[in-house]
Amino acid sequence: MKKRLILLLAAMLLLGGCAASQGKPADNAYEDYIVVGFSQVGAESDWRNANTRSMQQALSAENGYRLIIDDAQQKQERQITAIRNFIHQGVDYIVLAPTTEQGWDTVLAEAKAAQIPVIIVDRRIDVADEGLFACWIGSDFRLQGDTAVRWMEENLAGQPLQIVHLQGNYGSSAQIGRTESLDIGVAANPGWTLAARDSGDFTQAKGQELVEAYLAGGIGFNLIFAENDNMAYGAIDALKKNGLVPGKDVTIISFDANRTALQMVMKGEISFDVECNPLHGPRVQAVIEQLERGETPPKFTFVEESAFGAEGLTEEIIDSRGY
Ligand code: GZL
Image 1 (cartoon, rainbow, N blue to C red):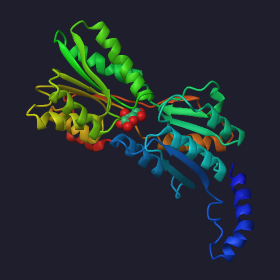
Image 2: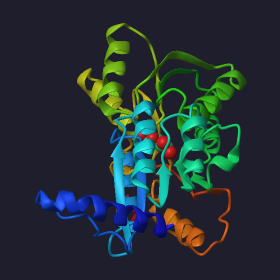
Image 3: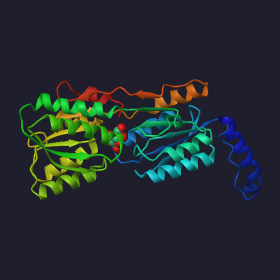
Image 4: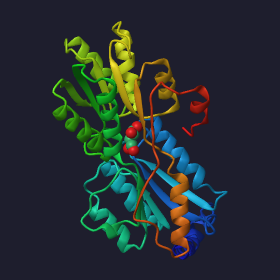
């Protein structure tokens, strides 16, 4: 794959001759590196930032990579533009953390036509031809949701639940999977009702805004099902501003299990937090090295994940975690 970049660099050197004549040295600094274009969802959450750091640490210059990261600010159209730019730049690989599951067929066909392998991380994509991507590495979001619902059934048995549901970005696999589980849980448990449901876009600010609006509107609820930790942080701020005690007046269920959130689990503010592992960098690096050797990586790889309640959780466990 690097040969294409060398050809590109050769072309740049030729063109760069005139650029150099204008004082801009031709850019041939990367001919010995594997160049990776990474289209990242955004920087909306602690999880997302940990995911970006993991990719930067693995695909580093010391490890022989030139990593180009584009932050899509949670907009699919910006990701499509970024992928087209990566194709134009002649990168060796494209890594895509997709905002949503739909809408990738056309641009990934363009990457395939340019013979640039695409690695999907985190959320899933729904394409007609799975040959459009080399492989996917991410989480089982339904399992995450089922784990949370099972904890509710086991630990809140017999309690009537009026549930506020803070969803992630609509159409993202994380939102789809976690919401499906809750819907099944509500249907299966007669004492559970949905008091309110909106997307908090996985952000702390929107999570707080929604819960403050529910409280101001007099909506009664005793459980918040937050589809990520940052929305849970916002919900907790809203509860405290209104004199309510998180974990006592309102049970909070969350996803991601960031260190900050696990501190809140230890304090009893968050009752249960389902891990969503963002540390995809080393796995992507291993896949690229397989592809460089002409090997075929597994098409789908699920990352190992667990879940946390206060019982047995210690500062040492929290400190030992990677994010
Ligand atoms: C899940 C990931 C979600 C996290 C959020 O894999 O896509 O997006 O749960 C993040 O924190 O914003």
